[in-house]
Image (cartoon, rainbow, N blue to C red; front, side, top):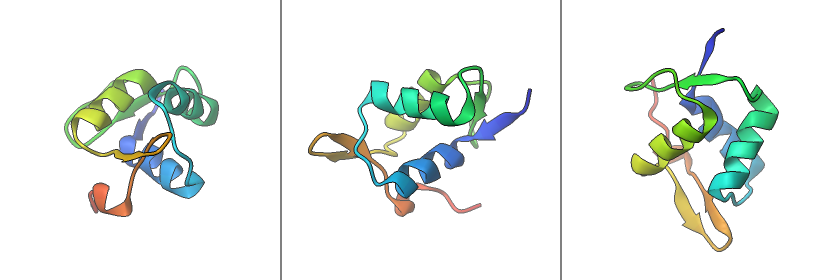
Length: 79
């Protein structure tokens, strides 16, 4: 099974312009990429959707909004 870079999730969030809760983002990731999808970033690998969301939150990739959070293009490293 191939691994999906976390940037893909951040771009999905930007494209939707939605405000997410943790549970809502996990559900959106699983709906788009599949419930068995695995994710990686520049510094971590073999993560589930829930693990990725936790990782991204801990890295400060989310911006609080009234009903949850989203992200910004400036939060996505460019490589």
